[in-house]
Image (cartoon, rainbow, N blue to C red; front, side, top):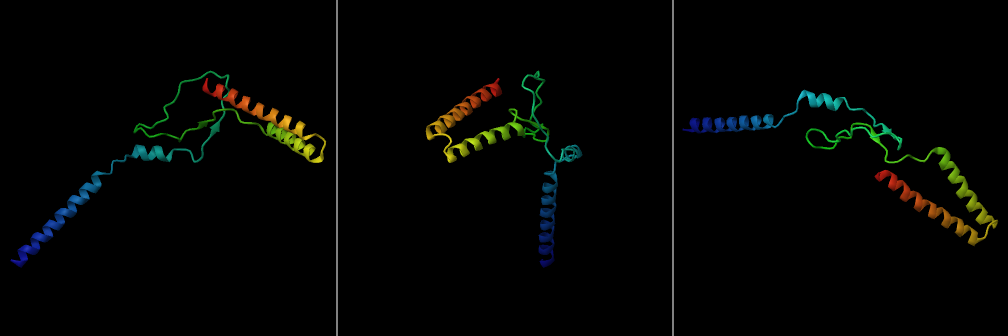
Length: 135
């Protein structure tokens, strides 16, 4: 009696273990193609800036076959970035404006007028750039 109970218990445990192993192995659905595609992605992203006057080519799907977004390709900037020369020129203008204010070379009213002029330029430039992006 004890032998048959022990044997039945061991058989049930082995059956449950085999069923669990089958369930675990059936959940693995990866293929060699997916593994090869994952290993072929570039180590770093390449960001490029397109010429706004260039003709638009066909768009490439940005999703993988399973529906998830694909960021492995090169990314394109939405707008042309400010060059180093433009940034340096702007920094020099703002620094000289601040230095003139501190030294008293220009009045507070003149300083505020120039600041307002730069803010107006920034607001217009932002709207113009946004309009170019949405074209």
